[in-house]
Every structure is written in C-alpha cells, then in structure tokens.
Length: 177
Length: 177
DNA sequence: GGTCGCATGTTGTCATGTAAACAATCGCCC
DNA sequence: GGGCGATTGTTTACATGACAACATGCGACC
Image (tube, rainbow over all chains, first blue to last red; front, side):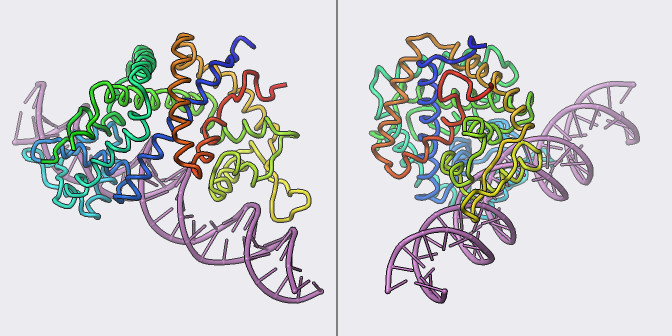
C-alpha cells in the first residue's frame, strides 16, 4: 500500500513538528525545574489556585479542570503539601472532599516563576515567530484541533485543559496582586 | 512588566499549539497500545532495528540514536526481551556491549503496527492539512527548531531523534520486505 | 605487561503516572 | 429513616523514567 506512504512534504512537516513540540516543552519545563524547583505539574496546580477565588479549589474541581486522574491529583497534592506550597482544608458541606489551598509559600513560589514562564513562551515561541507565522500556526493547529474534536467527542474535552490550562489563558497574570 | 504579557494572537497560537501537540500524540500512542499492544518506546526501538542492517544494533548506538539514558534503554530492552520482541546478543569484539536483535516476533509485531502508524499520521495530521498549511507548518516549525538549535547547542542534538526518529524518516516503510 | 582513565551496561532509589480495589459520604427514593 | 447506587479520595500494585553508584572491559601510556 504505497498509497499510505507520506510524501516528502508531509514527512518534513511531521518531523519538524515533532521536534518543535519537544523542544518548546523541554525548554519551559527545564527552566521551571532549574530556576524555581517546580515541576510542570506543580506549576499547573499553582496557576489554577492563583486564579481561584480565595486561592482555593476543591480537589474534584481541580482534577476536572486539569483532566487528571483522581489518584494523580491525590499524590500531587501530597507532594506539594510536603513541600509546603499547598495545604488541604475540609470542604464546606461535604465531608468527602477537601479544598486545595494555596499557602503563602506556594503563592510566593508561583509569583516568582510566572514571569519566567511567560518569558519562556516568548523566548522560544512567540517572539521567534512573525505575526504571519503566528496566524498560520493558529490556522494549522485549530484545523487539527477541530478535526480532533469532530472525531473524538469523548476525548475532545479531555485534551482541552490539561495543557492549555497550564498556560496563560489570557494576557494578564492570573493573580500576582 | 506588562511588556512580558502575551497578546491575544500569541495566546491563541500557544493554546492551539499545545492542544494540537497533545491530541496528535495521544491518538498515535493510544492506537499503538490498543491495537498492537505496543508502547511508543517499543515502537521506536522496533523501528530502529527494522532499519538496521541485519536487524540488530549495538545498545550504545541505539541509546545514542534515540537519545535515551543508558539505564532507560537497559530497562526497555529487558522488558521487550520478556515480551519476546527483541533479544540480546554479545557484540563482536567488545565484551562490554551487546547487540539488540529483532526477533521474529518483534518483526511481526512491527510489521503489523507500521501501516497503522502511518495511517495514524495521515488521519490526524497529514490528511487534515492542505498543501499550503503543510508548508506553513514546515516554515513555523523549522523556524522554531532553528532558533532552538542556535541557542541550545548542547541540547539541539538531544531533541533530534528521540521523537522524529519514532517516525517515518522517509516515505517508504523501513523494512517490510 | 601493568595501571589508570574512559566507555558501557546494570541496578538501586526516587519521582511520577495509571488502573483498580477500598473506604467513606451523599443523596435520592421508597 | 433506611437502603443503595453514585461520588470522592486514598491506597496498593505496577510501569516507566532520571540519576547516581557500581562493576567490568577496553585501550592507551609508561
């Protein structure tokens, strides 16, 4: 079935894309780890909390927002609790759940890392591309995202937040007040 | 430093890109696992072997090619050995090393999965995009790859093969003879 | 031909993720 | 108000990956 084979253009696009995706991710993750002692997972959680009212969010909702397994969140919170960036507090009105609360230390850690995070996106992504290129990428990526959503109804939402949530949903900082 | 903030276009590109990268990867990995019982790591190793003369490759070279830690390769090979897709054979002329050898079972597994792999790339990537979009993506991705290489001399090579190697470096099948 | 630094793998330890079994609680329904 | 299925978290395997400590063989240098 040579019909299946990829032509040169497709192959080149594929490989370039794969590299890009690894490179960008690696730069950001490494910087977080090296300069701020945070994993991406830590950062995502802190970002979510910093955007939540009162800097707290129920575990269930955090898991939903990040599309994480409950067990994964449970462990992650335990780790972060150990490091002192978040704390557990009983949820009001439901003895089953608890709220994840941003501690002062967590707030500090996040505020320290946030500018570098944005700067990282600039440095290895946004500033490297021209306006035209950004538009072209939006076109390409949204085309693929659209195709994916259309064919993976269940999974569509799954993808949604896990990673995009990790990022500046908008221009301003989440809460750096 | 509001100067650091991302504008709307940049934010949109970033989020769309993040989704795209997860979606595509997820589709491919899931298909491999579900339909062929292979992890991505398994597949990469099998692909490399299937392209190597005599279907064997020294461990050191495999690790270099994939940019894996030696320990990672060691464990991966052990797992695959258990499952019977590869075997270890002493390297000629150097008692320290060994060759990873593709077994008949491994060959069969790879040949079964390969068309689906290519089809997956088609389905969720190549066929979804127009020729213009492919060109635009090549432009964008290679711009970023170039920028990365220029700023991460050491790391540049690191990225190289781990993932792109996982893929059809060219149009035809590696060795499906 | 002996020694020493380097190359090559393996293994122990820790971090992290998934899946499934558990435990506790809620809430609805009778 | 009792029961029961659904929710929500935790925990217990396992799988996987990074890093460092080891063990061994190679090779060059004296």
